[in-house]
Amino acid sequence: MPELPEVETIRRHLAPMMEGRELARLRIDDARWSVPIAPEEVAAAVEGRRIERLGRRGKYLELALKGEVHLMLHLRMTGTLLYDPEPDARYVRVAFELSDGHRVLFCDPRRFGTGELALGDEARDAFFAARLGVEPLGDEFTVDHLRTLARRSRAPIKAFLLDQTKIAGVGNIYADEALFRSRIHPLRRTSTLKAGQLEELRDAVVATLEKGIDHGGSTIDDFRHPDGISGSFQNEFLVHTRRGEACVRCGGEIVKFVAAGRGTYACERCQPRPRVRRHA
DNA sequence: CGCCCTGTTGGGGA
DNA sequence: ATCCCCAACAGGGC
Image (cartoon, rainbow, N blue to C red):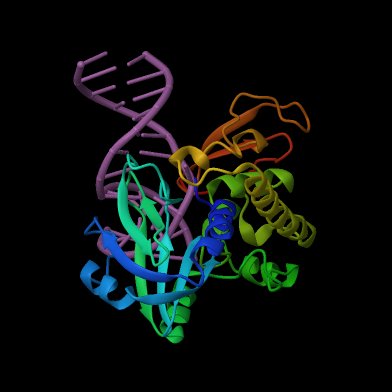
């Protein structure tokens, strides 16, 4: 279930176990794992290097190695990182063997996860710059910034929130939650939102992501079992996956529809549907 | 048992 | 700029 809060939770948990160690060996069992560069090349570039930092940018994890060698990992839908899991762990795609004898396994049933190499800080910055916009939990995510972005977007607000080149890290679930909190319908045209609504939306995005991180940090205690992370936030969602249930705010019925090509949940009493429909 | 649909993501082509 | 489809697999409904 990796969205930004889950990725951040994983990062916080693994950083103390990985930073300062040497990446003794990298075993890639999935030829498709690293798309632009051959797996052997990736392994050759990282093996034997000290892990200086495990960072995060949007939904990417960044393994910063000595000598400005960077490995950017993306867990996509079903990927996860397990620390010293049981020997029967399934769907192991990549194994990071550390100099202290411990192992971190990248497990991913659907094989959507990716790993990419960047040689030099500049190459890493370029990689992120091409894909990611403002960091939602950083100081730059201001109402002014959001207003500037929103002014020139004719897309539905849900598509806007999911566009990683605008805001980095908001996924399908948190987009629904943030829109519900700010009482904005997912199909509202972004450029028509009022200043006050954008302000509420900004605060809602930050609040939902932070809540997810807080909740993850306090409930996840098993990083050896693939189920250690799943289900933790499920009961905290106010709208997502709650089709047919009563809105916690007004008692109206939560409905499901498609927006931005994704399953979308909303209370159309709290979040009034725009009159003019877009997209056929 | 099998078929069909859905899905936490993002890239590429139309 | 935007939309649709796809990657590969599990799980649920029928």
